[in-house]
Image 1: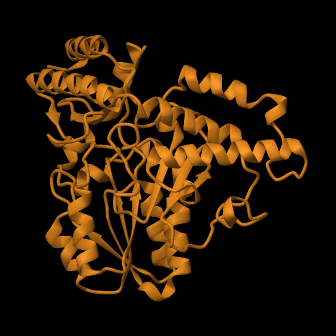
Image 2: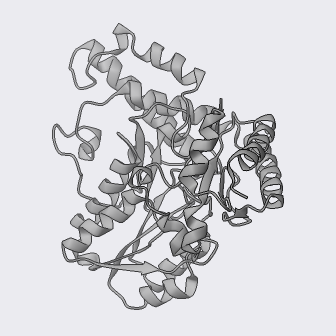
Length: 379
């Protein structure tokens, strides 16, 4: 099997499997809110995991909150900030190439009467500075929402330039940043990145599904999305899970120690595939400076879903659009917003890699693409 769909989800690492087994022992399974010694042991473990996670992300322990997923983190950050900071302004700035977790939150806010202003993006998927300046200069912007690495194209946000523009024109505007596809693939230091809130997902870095992280910079005030017993400093109620938090931490530790080595290997795979596919008439849609872990390519003569299922015959797994939108069978809204024509976008397939992928897999992939064209393309 060749699995090139790691932007959708990753397989659980052996280290995480072992950590899960250790964390589910009876002596660690008490409710962290209980007053007895087993409860104290559980809460100490949980807070230790929280601190270590914060250290690896360049944050303070009190700025880190464990969630069920990045979608929950996004909802908490975006809705929670606008709910709590009504005097900050009535407008939110973003782009139409964001993940659905962000876009649906913005649609929700729009129905509540907030003004959503969308910044235009270029063919490389990056927000246009002149468009950002235009929207900021209209005033009243409470929040700006961006994605560090686009999940469909790998386009990398010029965060430093964009955030400087935001803070120069509108110093009081808060910034939410989706860091899901960047985590473990490029350095992410929350103390210097310039964002006020960030979201992360465990299952994108070889943890299990069901764990995510929300970063809220100290001093930023938001309303919680989930109410209850007041766990996690009142920001995310619900019984804390050292198991899920520990799984996230273990995956983060593993991936953080291999960023440079893994990126170099994946870069070589990406360069090879770009060259070979282009020689076969495929159109590369990911920008040249995209993060190498994502490669979006359009195959002439094959609609994206057709190519996906042809590859599946050979036990090769890729995706068309984001997994959150795939079953709707729509053309990628990200590619269309970038200016890609509909026919090319309709033939687009996303290849996404993890540190476990190899050059041998890439070579087999090219062989199978040749086989598919030989067998199925009507000449």
